[in-house]
Image 1 (cartoon, rainbow, N blue to C red):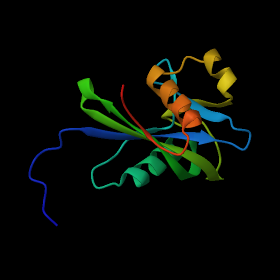
Image 2 (cartoon, rainbow, N blue to C red):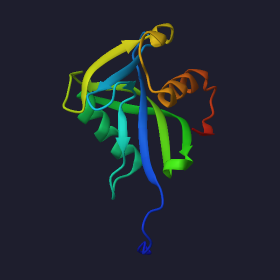
Image 3 (cartoon, rainbow, N blue to C red):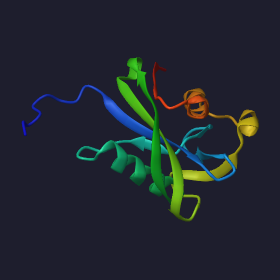
Image 4 (spheres, rainbow, N blue to C red):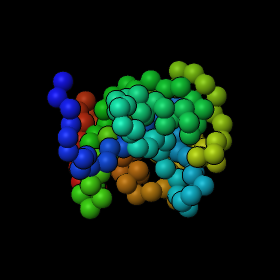
Length: 140
């Protein structure tokens, strides 16, 4: 394997659209921003995208999830970020507030408008529900 001698040019993040059996989506309220968002975050050096996302979900929610499908790859050009979003389902753990996410709520698509959700995360939720067997590639 060739060692990378150049510094990384993009930050990679991953988020999960976690659905329950009633097709509700889990959104979380972080203490550091005034918006709800999807569980997830930055991938650490030496971590795979899937391992990093599973870690982030567990840290933020207490849940253990299984990634079920790629929703999309989103470029945030002005921030040099690439965000990868997956559908996921709960396979263990217990939903709880954490230091990173102080409140969680399961919502239907119709209830999303009642919450102040980051616009980019709202778009990813809708992409998840519209996804007909293929991932999207978008700039956000």
